[in-house]
Each structure stands twice: as C-alpha cells, then as structure tokens.
Image (cartoon, rainbow, N blue to C red; front, side, top):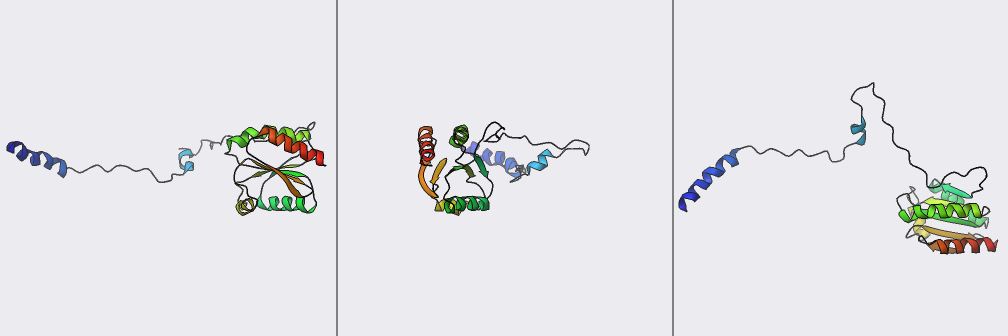
Length: 176
C-alpha cells in the first residue's frame, strides 16, 4: 500500500503541470444582427417574418367599433374624453404575450361589430408610460374589460369569461 501511495504523486504531477485548456465562453448578449450579417456584400439583407395582427382590419361591409390605442398620451386623451363627454365605451386591457387575451380577441371583435355604437378601445398594457395610469385604474390582471356608461365605469369583467363579457356588453347596450 505504501508503494501505491508513492506512485500517486508521480502520476498526478504530469496532470498538474499540463496546461489546462480554458473553456471558451460565449458573448454575454450577442447581437442578433451579427448572426444575420451576410458574409458577402452582394447577398440580400434577410427580412424578418411578419406576424398577423390580433385584430384584423374590418372590411367595408363590417362596421367594427374597435380602436387600437397606440400611446400613453392617446390613452389619456380617449379616457378623459369618455369621462368628460359622458360617452359609452369599453376599454379592453390586453397584452401580446397573453394567451387568454388572444383567445378573447375574436369574441371582442365580433361584439364590436354587433354593437357598432359602443366603441371598444384596445389598450396594450405594455405601452411605455402607461404603468402608473393602469395602477390607478387597478388593472391587476389581463384581460380586463371596463365598461363605461355616461362617463362612469359601470362594470368590469376580469379574465376570459365570454358569458360575463356578453352580459356586460348587452347591459351597456340596453342602457343607451
């Protein structure tokens, strides 16, 4: 046994003296553009795929009342106009990444065609500068629907509940 212990340091010595290969670490956050750059200047620039919109644009025969809110300022303007002018409206708070919101998209689009006199405002919660306003409105989960009658919030539907949404829309329509 003593003999084996004596050989052990001699066997390990070459391993310890040999230089250890350093692992090659990838860049922390490589740019996707670097991978897409063509190797020669004559190659065409790659194009990014297009994605379908959540709400398709309505044709001339359909009279959809869906309005996509595209900025925090336009949300503020629309929201204050609904309250000041005492208008009926539905605010649909959603996000692109939300599965239940995508499931509700055709339902709310159909309702906006069914009730063309009630505007439906689609608000993406990820719009820059909208966070504080959504906190004030107590938007904690999505999809959330706020129904306004005479400028006041009359009801709210949280979640992907089609029956509650249809009932609230019908109620708002009857109040007009």
